[in-house]
Amino acid sequence: MARVLVIGVGQIGSELGPALVEQGHEVVLADRLPPEETAGWDVLQKGLGADGVRKRWHRLDVSDTPALTGLLRELRPDVTYHLAALLSATGEKNPDLCWRINVDTTREVISTLSSFNAAVAPRLVVPSSIAAFGPLPGEEIPAVTPDLYPMMPTSMYGITKVAGELLGAYAAAKQNVDFRGLRFPGLLNTAPPGGGSSDFANMMYFAAAAGKHEVEVFCRPDTRIPFMYMPDAVKAIIEVAMAPAARLSRRTYNVAAMSPSAADIAAALRARVGRFDVRYVPDFRQAILDSWPRALEDSPARADWDWKPTWDLESMTDDLLAQLGWNKPA
Image (cartoon, rainbow, N blue to C red; front, side, top):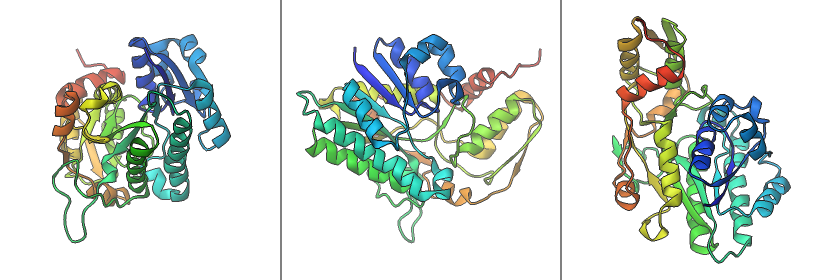
């Protein structure tokens, strides 16, 4: 059993926390909001019970450096999941804040964990993203993008993710912090859209589950990026955190599951709910989406720690609609 700190209990953390508790770990959840005000409150309650959430909860604004470092020193966690971040669309609107939240706080966490001088290096897990990639000048990004493709992100969010990966690799080499990261695709679950450029998919699922017959999204129908259902994302981030260090050949890994287009997602929903019209009205987020991989090559993760996704578009669509409360007509 490990002492685990989850910083930032949003889309990932609300499902990660209960999964870690179920595995027998000692878990503290830290977020700037009270638990009842987080987007994942319903998920947390379902997994831990209201009292179970509250007894593990710690109010923390990650931009408050003394509070952040103080909590780390108080808990001295074996494993820290640092999930607090501004997402891509929100980050473009406030790039300075995006850097402060996504990079400066990661640097502070690394520095504090390093100061422990522990005999066994504390593990730090920080999600990266497909937004870390981008096309080389005059070229298109490979349709199936490998782990070691040069990173030329076009958004501040992507820039911060590359910086985080590099800080983590440096920490592992020189600061006695066992850093591990994953380049996640767009993630789908019951959390409402939260400011990411992949939110067009969430918008479609939420509209269909609510019985709406039409929805407007901010991308073209041929927009294709990698996606992953949240149960697979939680499985992946726990597996990479707990994998034997000797098996890991790198500090950050691609992980892949499915790569549907926006039109594919609409068709999967239409096949289940009937009439479902999508109006495609691209905005500034289309350029961000176009700079991302259309699929990820993840053979290093499969070889090093036996990664394998469970969910595809069809099985995810059935389950996610049910989780969102859609009732299939008799």
